[in-house]
Image (cartoon, rainbow, N blue to C red; front, top):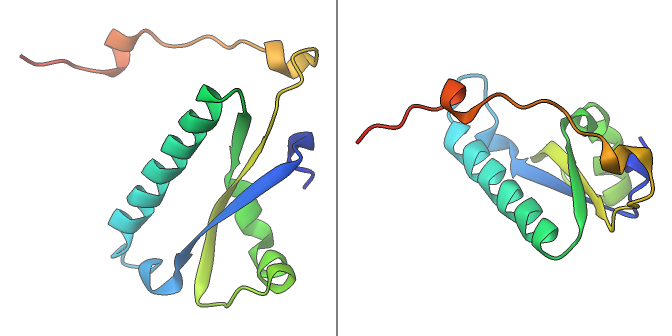
Length: 108
């Protein structure tokens, strides 16, 4: 993992007691996701690009060892971040998006 060339990465962990087979920690995981989204939106507002990487959980043991983090914590994902290189082709990649009305229902 090279974090898409970003100079920084943040790793987001949850206590292992929240990450269970019966999904008792689903609310905590949702809280972490909302925190991460807010963090990324804040970065964007300050001109910093970011990219969440859930695949980092595949190397969680190595990261815990390197960072001296107890096995009592489970890596949920990481976020690579830094100032975007506007000249790089990936900075100008656009994808099609579904129309809002096809994804969301508004009731009054």
